[in-house]
Image 1 (cartoon, chains in turn red, brown):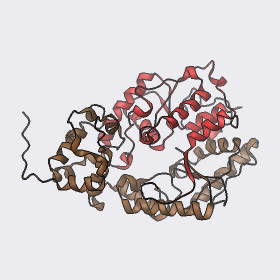
Image 2 (image 1 turned 60 degrees about the vertical axis):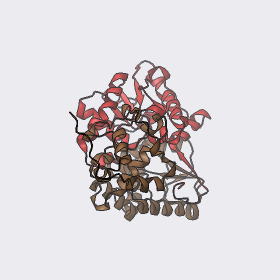
Image 3 (image 1 turned 135 degrees about the horizontal axis):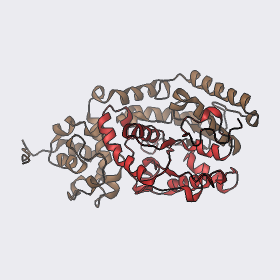
Image 4 (image 1 turned 45 degrees about the horizontal axis):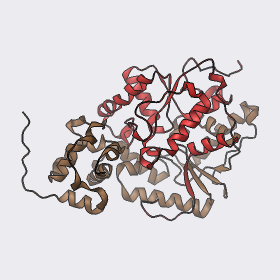
Length: 180
Length: 239
């Protein structure tokens, strides 16, 4: 919109900003009690578009705030480097549709190694491209982590994750919180 | 041993062209330090890296630049530029290389997604009726199966909704069940939101394709719908 100078009066936001705001002001009641004893480790993939490319760490810090609120601060492990200095996963810029599969995977190997280094069981990917790429890396390089949308873990922490909404959870959490 | 580069004549047409379009790109300030390349995960793919690619631009090797598929391996993530001591805008250089390819020679997958978006408002090419149907269908299942959400309300094009939610089209098409957790969160937060059905796909493949016209058209249609029809105060991307 800025690029094409299209006039508009609305604001443009990432949903991560809203999640963080709602948790801070108490609108969204979440906690990490469910993971207090389980101690399952989580890391996050910072999407380049809301990190480095906006020129501030504001939204990726919101992302960390939300993730820590739902999995527990002690169960969050950051990749190195991170936030605005993160490495792109290799799924961006249309790469997943771009046809250079071998090169895309070689590109992603850096990210794969960073993920493995954290020892985390789950990688939370708030960007759709990152999700697809990081999941593909896991299969291709034989990783043992799981790739999650952020809403999955928020809903799980709030005890409202339905039976059919668990595609990306590992066996450790597949039935967690279900009555049956 | 590496072969020395042979230059036919020292003209830099492509560099002039791109520099005119992005005067702030600072191509001439390159110190050849290689910091860009050191932190670039696309380095070495197809024997290329950002430093080398930029040298080629500055040496007028225009044909070689256009022949290399590297512009489609780089994701324009911007790490090179943020590390560059001279702040050279390499991502915009890459974007312009992409745009210099004849449209029908650019990667089929990206082009197809861009074409679909122009035609039907989302990269997956789903008619908006199908999108609305899927959304209603999934919402119905949740309302029936989970008493806690029996009053879950999902709307499309509701005029005056505070938030217009920009949905990546992959969810409704390939994994509709993934919509549930997102909606439940919005419901618990009491958000006043709706799905716009004009250019509703949150993705943007015309940008990746460097299709300026297509990208602009999508943005104009979307902004017009929000401003003149829905009058939402905030547009929220699910990513």
